[in-house]
Amino acid sequence: MVKIEKLNYGRPEKELYKDVSFELVEDAHYAFIGTNGTGKSTLIDMILNPTEYLYKGKIELDESVRNTRIGYVSQFDTMDDSADMTVFDYISAEFTAIENKIAQLCDRMATETDLEAIFDEYQRVLDEKDSIDGDNYDINIRKQLAIAGLEKLENHKISSLSGGEFKLVQVIKELLLSPKLLFMDEPDVFLDFERINALKELINAHKGTIVVITHNRFLLNHCFDHILHLENSDVQVFEGSYVEYNIELLSTKVELLEIAAREDEEIARQQEILNKARALATYMDNASLGRQVHARQTIVDRLKDRKTKLPFIDIRKPKMEFAFAEPMECETALSLKGYEAAFDEQLLSDVSFDIAVGDKVAIIGRNGTGKTTLLKDIAEAKKSSISFGEGALVRMFSQSIRSDEEDDKSVKDMLLANGMELISEMEKFLGYFGFPEEALHKRMKDFSGGERDLLKLAFLTVAKSNFLILDEPTGHLDVYDQVSLENAVRDYKGTVLIVSHDFYTVVNCVDYVLFVENNSIRRMSVRKFRQMIYENYFDKNYLLKEDKRKELELQINSKISKKDFETAKELLEKIEA
Image (tube, rainbow, N blue to C red; front, side, top):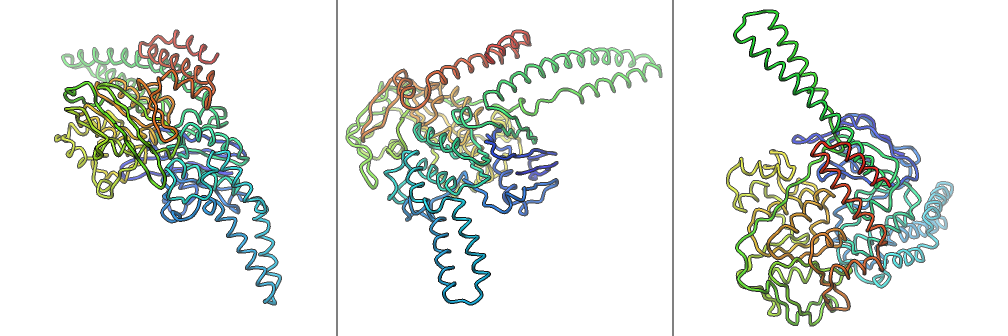
């Protein structure tokens, strides 16, 4: 359906694709993965709008695709243009447009004499309507809303939806138009556990070719039969599941690193011979010895050039650690007494809870229950029902708070504002998070969504605090960044309050959960939370297997670091089993 041949493209500061070639085939479900900033969203945009880019190579769409509508769900679609529409009207807009076009053509048939052209257009529009089951669009819309658990929102305005609800409505709108080729850029962002399951069902039910950029570990493991992996300016396609691909990558990593270790030994051996020859040549004027030194240097250079490269497994993994200020001089870090929150309707009523100093707590609940509103009110601490403990130094990561002023600032400006003064210190700091030195002078708005969130978290690690508030911090982060954040939160000495819909982030980081339901909040242990997830959302056996796989993967990486490749291979067999 799509053929890419020897594609080369980049920006002044970064090469994105180098001689990239791959194909997208019919009726395949692709997970498009890769670390943040590698150019996944750009590559999709190039396929959709090739004439807007100056590139080398070929981007070819099959004729059957060129002549049909290609579906697309954007990463950052806003609801501004459709804010006053109802959910049903928003989803049905394309269907009603077709019906209006048919009505107009019928009117023209009654008044115009040149009917042949009108009949041709009429038939084309009828075929278009039939291809998307236009006669039953109202039934299909309500069916999809029910699958997504959004049936009660049919007559709600788009402006009243939470970020997660709107994202799922966008997905439903595109899927109902039955595109043969559909691209979705992080459609899972901000979705709660129930809606993630709904998205899984929607993706799996789609009959055409679908390419989904996602970092969601649950979707990756349940929705795709092909993996499209972009890393270090190259792309590879794997036919199989994400689990199988991870095993293949891990196996390749062990194999290549074992080869690389042997190559390192040979380079070191040849270098030692070269050093001895050079030392001898410094006090012996001998042409033959000089030629030997030159020949030996050529061997060392050739070995280094041929050294095994790991484009899909030599991946940057940030080192995240939150700076801790002085501890709070009290036992209770945060107290809510009779808190209320309302928007168009009551969200939270008479909410009271205390968080002890040093606790790490997750607020969990369905989309639209008021979690982000609660976090924003806590951060601002303007309501009398909210109070922090003495000595609280609060810092916040927010998905929703974003300004044009911040977007226009450079990374250097942001680091200066956070107390970092030396350029060399800034460059070293950015390196910890996998950013090149040139990133220092880029504006925030020039980064991808995941890169921008990673930078905002990086700035947060510089500013000392003893209380962190994190609102959906993993939304746009890749898998490696997510794991780094989990480790940083777990090791942080202060108090943490986090809103997250990522199961792994919650169970790996927090001491207990505050569960939002029925306009109230109740405390729940992590064990109870796991049980609730097992019973209502995710399969227990799958999650337990994931935990075991992750444990074995950590053991394998530990053995690799010690160059114990034989044990690593034995552990690989256990993962495969």
